[in-house]
Image (cartoon, rainbow, N blue to C red):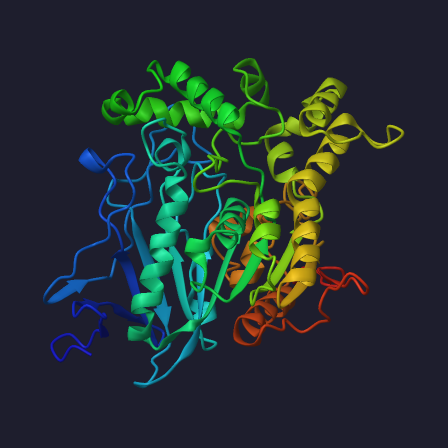
Length: 474
């Protein structure tokens, strides 16, 4: 503790110190740089770790998010974020020296093209108050993180995550965290990224437990990645060349990614596969990622893995993308058939419901439910343990049409029910009891590997359901 200010301080393993702030008895450190800004001469290069320093650095403000276009941006909006975005944040109890607490590391979602660890929805206070050291990380997004360039290292956003996890391994003891008891967890693209990391030799030992919320594990082939980059560059008025892109104005590139993200028909027109919701994803480059996550895990887990897995999905995932703006009603039968053909899945017999409802169900299963089930089955047979859940609480959002959509579980998991994003997802009076149940399950898993219900096994499959009995607060 600093005698001058009373602010909490920690000394990292290389000797440099950080000064944070107190928040309700917790030590909070924000905007800790784990890598140099990946711009200028470092654009499209592997991440470069921060060099050790002497003295004290302030860690009281979040670093900027990586540049991206906001999800709800208006046509005249500007991109958000800044270059110095390779940062992480720590919430920790005021633990005595020698303490070794479980660590939870959060990897945010956002389709690999947007998102920020600084979003109020991801505040780690509720976790840290219950005896864990909570860390949230940022990584490169969009073109910089995942565009496939012939003369640049592939999957740079995943390289960033690996470096952040190594930073946790090396330094989290300064907050009383146990580097041998790390749970890495994420949602959507964050969960998909973790699924990729799980199969990499470079990630072994960096975490012992994994929580995957609605894992989006689809990866692009090199051909698909090249088509996606060509589409982005055509819309932005540039060419898919590393040297040219390094000096191209950033806003048109971000705007092009946003347009492709929002418009499925534009993606098809530009030659992008209908099975991908977002134009940029991890790429099966043959170097870092040699196989899709499930196949990579099968190979990596030929010998039993010590990892423990908690994985699940929401009942109405795709309604997040199709309900706002009335898009559900504009979906035609041709859209359903086009997706089924691109994804290589069979259309269910009969035509119950509207085309929008059927496309939602088909995409929800393909993108989230089926991967979650497959990951649980694989972990049940080749890892230390597997637990499954399903989130079914119907959000009142959009006149009750949102349902248990993608991301609706997030306010409940984090215990952050009163912010703008939480209200959009879960309404004004979400059931606090559901939040308590889910957060206690996540905490118990992080501390013991057992979330509180039976493990999933091939012989006795078990799925814990969240949200069936809870009702909104009066």
